[in-house]
Length: 319
Image 1 (cartoon, rainbow, N blue to C red):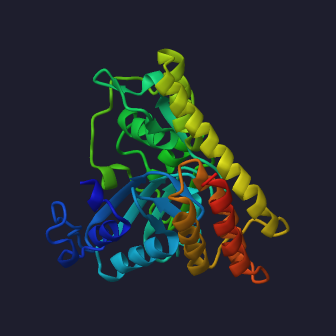
Image 2: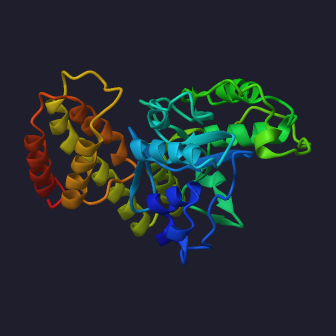
């Protein structure tokens, strides 16, 4: 159930913490051993140093600690992790190369990922789902897996997926020593699909703009007062974020884009914002780069930033 989809539960599942999962969902956790190869795939929204769950965020430091726990607890011999999210490369920048983990991300640490099969194409059983059916990176690796021999190596797949994912920079991290092993060692054997490995012809949509694109498309088709009102609401929300962070950016305009940050400070600024303004929207997540960079600098007065955030939220979001 949705309420169970939390960072805490996710980390308990992948680290094999069955006691913590009793009575939650199916209660199942990873029960692999150091004789097993493990494949993990995650797809959702993201921002520098975090990936989004329905109500909370999973931060890079916590994910990397969990992966190290998996290694310590001997839950795999080799682990492959595919991650689809905006700025997903930021999650593995500090992934150690001695953990037997090979990670591939949809984007680097500074760019969006892209939705695919959106708008009128996002229809399931006659109903538009109001989002996209997939993401360019995820669709690329899944269709590549279907359309090519399972004996192809992880490296071969990476190069093909990298070429197909033309709107962002697919990246790899960690241990590359086993990247020459066949895909089937991690995803199992399969028959090649009868469909040709064609270029994806759908239109790519920046993940930050998927909701706006859907609302514009819906309003153009239905042209009602309700659809127009909801579209206007989205546009005004985006303007509020633009307005707030045009001020916040003044705090870090001379700071170079950070490779790492103080995560306690980062979490604190995000919590301060969400307590005052409400939870970040998909569009708003792009502005977390400001907080990430601010928290990387020692000479910025973080208290002044927090006070400014609160004041701006009161002025802009309650206007």
